[in-house]
Length: 237
Image (cartoon, rainbow, N blue to C red):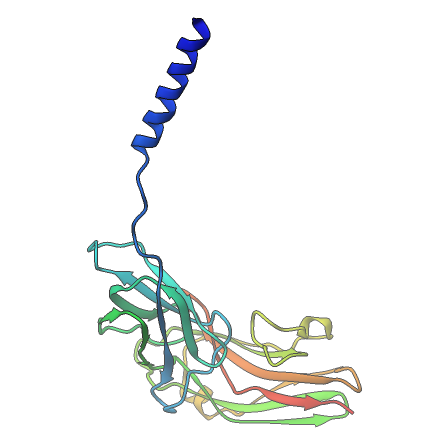
């Protein structure tokens, strides 16, 4: 008798548990959102690196104050996420080496949705060239500020070298070489900086190897991301 009562109680608890269980009938993420971040100065995609900026998405379909969702940058200045919930979004490129956007972009995302954004970089690397002398690489360039009023102080200029085309602050093997040639500035952009031709030197590259190199400059904003030159392929004899 006790066994029967116990079994009935267990069955009742199990049934109660099932009756309280909610069925998740929400549609899964079924949309793709992609696009380009375009440099206002050059009209081309922003020169960046993986994670060099983020595209912030705030879904307004259900809340006026949603938790932000971020799509990271690709090195070629594009972004893409194939697992987005369809809905109405406020979208803002952020956390990159460019002036904050003041315009709000509202967009309905569904299926495959594409949208490009234009940004103004803090700084541009111009007249970039390189020369290899033996195992020493020299990169020469100028720095141009599209907007000077309110520009944060420049921290430094750095060379980056990697053995793959993915090269930047998060992908560099330059520390295996001696004497990193970092040009420290820690000051405002001035006419002297604008007129200066800079040269950064990377010594002691390994013979018989192929490297990829570029330079970057950063300002002292909240994110301290780099504005970059293009990437060059360097074959060391």
